[in-house]
Structure formats: structure tokens, C-alpha cells
Length: 277
Image 1 (cartoon, rainbow, N blue to C red):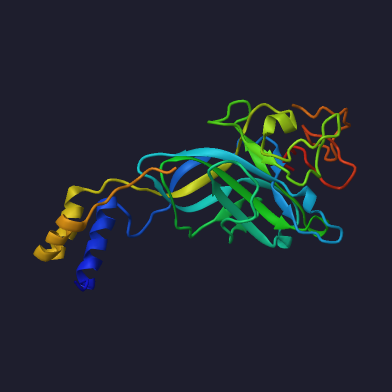
Image 2 (image 1 turned 180 degrees about the horizontal axis):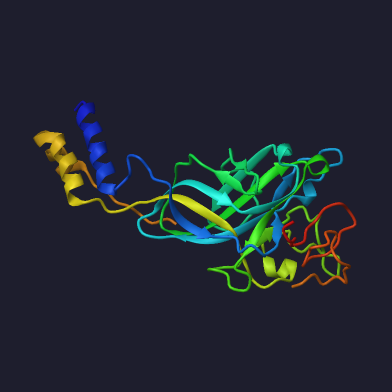
């Protein structure tokens, strides 16, 4: 039988109402780990230099959070950080929602960096089902002309959920006393920087998906009419499923005078937790 596109469209509206999907999504604060104002930052940057090639120094950090209720419609995020270079050299500002910590070159682009060194994302339409996720934020930038960006630590010694993880897959940054890279795989930050287990500072904005008032669904269902209701009774089934050490090396003080962890490197890169300027 030929489908009635008008009725199907009204059925879709009913599904929206039954799921509580907002027509105009508010940018409510869904989750926040605010910066404490005193903790150091960790590197979060893909180095785009090609001559020389600095890709082995590229590093990302990850922290976990839990989506509650029936899920979140995420419209924005902020990563609180420190600028220790030239933000005009950013080629892109990126973020990702992951099911486990791990270096990635894909994700959400289009972020901006404000005058305080924070990375901001707006206008997102990302639905996250209930569950635990890892958030990842970084800049793509050459180091020679642009310097580095650092993501702020927070909740030092008292992380919410897991402590943050960090990964430098190219192995270009710190090594232990045996010369082995510390973070080629995702590694707890405390084992890399010698700091207490900590979080990273970020906020997530959007709207929690809620169960609608009964009247909302009834109004839309009545609009379908008798024929549409019959089809709904026969065909419509809506379900929402939940988805998912210090460095061992005997190191001198790190290059930046305010650094509190990590080892000085024989190059210009900084892989230590650095105090804000």
C-alpha cells in the first residue's frame, strides 16, 4: 500500500513529543568541572610542523563524565586552559566524545579560543545516551610559530570518577629512567606528571532529554486523527536504549620556571604540568 506521507510526518511529530525532544534547545549547564584557579595545565595539541616534523610530540588528554537521565542533547562545551603561545596560529580547535580514552584526529571542529585561553564550542547538536564518556579537547597548531596550549587540571587529589588520562602516541615526550616513553598509550596523568590523581577543567551545555507532560503527547496524537491513531496502534513502537609517578628519570627542573611536574626536555617542547602565567 502506498504510504501516506502526511500521516507519516505527523507520526514523526508524535515520536518527537513522546521522547521529549526539545523544539528549541536551551543551553543549560549539564555538567561542569570548573577550574580551581591554582592547578597547572597539561599539553593538548597536535603539532602541525613539517620542517622539522614535530608530529611525534602531539599529545591529547581525556577526562570522564557520566550522562544521566534519558540522555543529553549537547549544544556546547568549554575547555578551560592556558595559552602559552600565539592562538592566531591555530589551524583548528577540536573536541571529541569518546567511549574510552584514546588519541584521535577526528571529532568536532569549529571551536574558538577566547582571550582567557579557553576553548569554546557552540551550536552543537550531539545526542549522548545515558552512560560514561571521555571528553577530549585540543588545538592543531605549529609549535615553531605558535607555541603551545595547555588544558587546566582541577580537583587535584580528589577527582570525580576516574582521574584524567593522557597519550603521546609518537613517543616524543618524557621517558622514564630506562629511556622508555611514558605515555604512548592512554596513561593516568598521575603516573606521567607525578601529581595526585586529578581531573581536567571543562563544562558541557545543552538540555537533558526529559519525559514530556502527558498533555503534550496527547495534543500531538490528537492532531494525527482517527486514521493516524489506528496506524500508530498497528505500527508505532518507540524505544529508547541506553548506549553505551613521577618520571623515573633523574631530571632537572622543567623549562618553565613555574612548572611543578615532569622533566625538562632536550628540545623546545614542554610536557610538564605548568602553572598559569
